[in-house]
Image 1 (cartoon, rainbow, N blue to C red):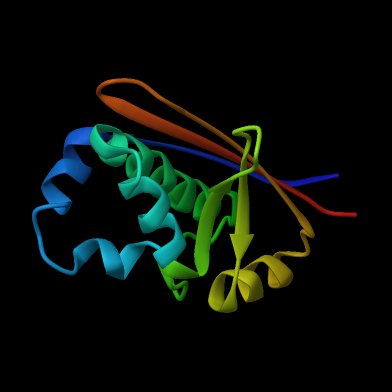
Image 2 (cartoon, one colour; image 1 turned 30 degrees about the vertical axis):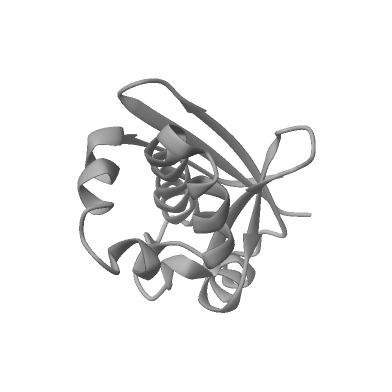
Length: 124
């Protein structure tokens, strides 16, 4: 059963600006997310924008927003075939458990100016 759906869009320029502020990315992204995104060279801001959109979409799918959730506790990684998956830790995992959902589905897309993420929470 679907327990929640969330979608979000992030302008890539926002991440371009954030990349210029020392320490800001480390506040919002898991170290593994940053390592993967930075390995993409010029695609770093696209990758981070999609991942930030996923964090926002997760809060929307919960129906509670991201209040009380440490954003680094939401990590988006790619499987060997490129398919994204989301890993939750600490505050984010606790929020998922409170929601009654037990599975998270994620879809990401990005193009030159925008990144979009969709999250579907499933219960049972």
